[in-house]
Amino acid sequence: MLRWCIPEEEQNDILFHFHTSICGGHFGGSRTAAKVLQSGFYWPTLFKDAHNFYKACDRCQRTENISRRNEMPLQCILEVELFDVWGIDFMGPFLSSHGDLYMLVDYVSKWVEAIATPRNDSW
Image (cartoon, rainbow, N blue to C red):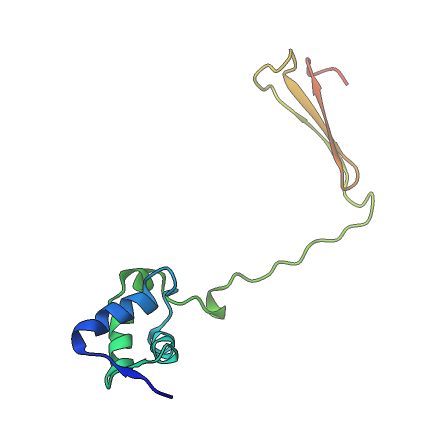
């Protein structure tokens, strides 16, 4: 495969294009150097320069790499049978909405029913 040997004054522009620009993706040094090689460019200190460019990138150093260690653990969904969890809550007073100040919340199954009431002694 033929590659163009790039002079020193153009190397930072190429690294900027393959790392920081819209098509770059802010990948690490090795991946950025691989993208440069895939495009047909080369210079003797490519991998060292790509790693130094990555280390100097402010955005990359702020976000760092997200690994499996940084992922949130999955929480199991609690499965309940119908009528296992039930209750009635009476809440209020709230700000008046169409004359209603209180709310009666009835949850007998997965579906919750809320009824707005004007007084705290009404059903």
